[in-house]
Amino acid sequence: MGVSFVGGQSFGLLITLAIAVHNIPEGLAISLVMVPKGISVMRAAGWSIFSSLPQPLMAVPAFLFVEAFKPLLPVGLGFAAGAMIWLAVAEILPDALKDASREEVATLLTVSVAAMLALQVLLG
Image 1: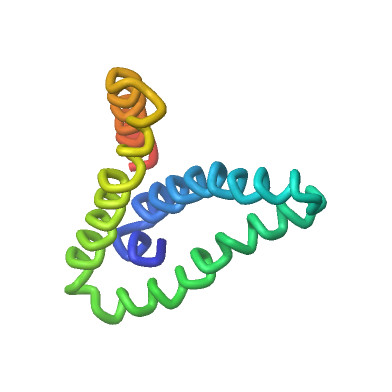
Image 2: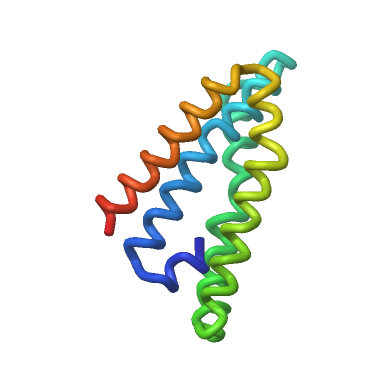
């Protein structure tokens, strides 16, 4: 998140919003495992929030670091994009293909990319 804000406020907001949207199912996954084991809903929600806490906390140091090394911004953004693409291709897509047809996965992937591009245009 911090790296993205060096690229401009609208780009930073886009990336922050994308990460926030991603954190919703991640938090639900954590809570949905804990609640059936007897953990209260509030406590499970607290653990879900805690699991994502490093992201906003490290955003400020990341912003300051990248601001100091601004010429390396393309490398930082490229590394972050590459890491997310690798994660999607190596982890998420194979799991999705186990549970859904290729057509369903391809359709959802296309709609997701289109939604992110539309969001970027709207915020840009």
